[in-house]
Amino acid sequence: MPLLQDIHILARRVSDIIWNHTLREGNCVADSLAKKVRTSL
Image 1: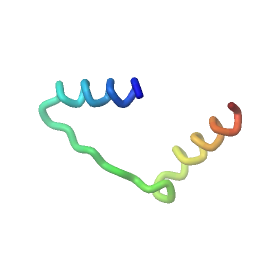
Image 2: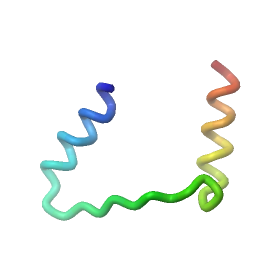
Image 3: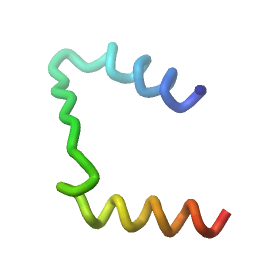
């Protein structure tokens, strides 16, 4: 996946990075946007 490779390359360039995982239930806005995009394809 090219996007994930780009993310990993950029992350290596940053000296301090914090990864945070948020469950869908905790981020309703992003979840509804993702669903909208999926249904429009």
